[in-house]
Length: 302
Image 1 (cartoon, rainbow, N blue to C red):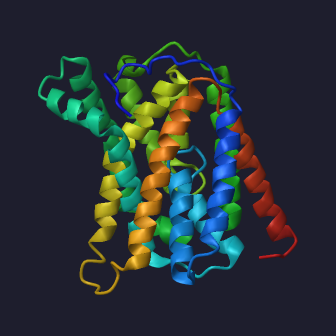
Image 2: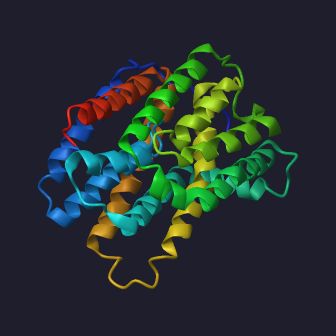
């Protein structure tokens, strides 16, 4: 994971673009099989941790998957405890992957005239709209925006937006070419991720691509931006658990660990994949999942 700078990633020998998704599918199927052998309490915790770790950083919406998976499976609502656990897990993932970058950014912060110092303050600027939206509308999202049909619509719509931004935008700008206008627009767009199905990484990558930022740099900025946003969400929710005894138990720890490990692997896999291929596979997945939800509702299966 060692990286010498925040400049675009060093080119490596090309690999088939389909290899990473196929390997990911095989690993997920193996993990699902292993999860089925766990005790019931751990089964749900590890299953949700796997979903969170995969979907938080891929542009497919973690909030949508954490609502739809229990809905499909008939699981009970895991509640606030697992919500906090999964946020802590993905925070661990992004810190584990980018800790060297964050040290460089923090060291450079007093020098905003340097590339890393400027990037630090752009990330701060970009994080503000999402943080405000999270505080103001978190309760609304928890209560009024959990309809599977609404989620299906958001999955499909955002998928088409992602496809258009990726397919028809210029691709010449790199990480340190991001400016104040880019950071503001990405941050404002990130506030829309409060709607399950939109995806924080999906909408920030889409806006970055629409601004002409190449794929790997768009994803990298999105993941770095996710650090303060995920940290804020985890701390905001964690305060509710501190006075509740017995919540920090084995399943809680299992959920945190699973989300952290899978999340870190997802970040690395996506950054490598976007050096060689576009976002079409994620758009296809979004459309197929939306169609599955609509079909399930139409047939009265749920």
